[in-house]
Amino acid sequence: MTTTAPHEAFLQAFHAEHPAVTAEAFAGGRAPDGRFDACVSHMALMLMSDIEQVAAEVARVLSPGGVLACVVGGGAVGGEAYERFLTLLRHTVEEAPAAQRIPALGDRRTRSREGLDEVLGPAGFGPVDWETVPIDLSGPVEQVWAAVSGLYDLGPLDRTTVDGLRQAFFAEVKDMTTSDGRVPCAFKIRLATTHLA
Image (cartoon, rainbow, N blue to C red):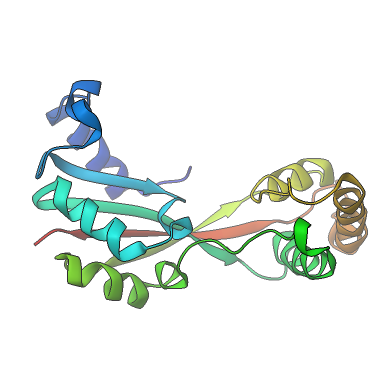
């Protein structure tokens, strides 16, 4: 994962000041109220249902002033292989039998700053700081296919459908492959941070 210098410095300082969380902190299966100074969610919050309940639970276990740091997907950079993959995947899923369709997950509000403020504010969090970070997945077509197809659960699709998606992807990115065999591919993540009031 790519991090920026201020966030890396924060994580290093936090880790140096606070001992590692142990299994004892979760005795009985429920963390104590106000037990943690920070909560980190990497590409998970955006997939959860009943997001208000999740926000309330995070607020419950954080100490006052505690930090919530979330990484959520930000979509394609544009004009590259990931954008083309998303279009192909959408069409593939739409054409698949109902039993093979990949279900939509999460609450769309988690994918924007305003939406996160709407969800987290009532749970006691302050306004969300928002940073966009591009992730470069460029490389040979096989490597790019492995990266983009690994971002989604293609398990519900049958093997023939996945093979067809792969062939369509290879054909779709052929025109953008550079002379040295690299396929440009990138997506954005959003790093959202907020503090509990």
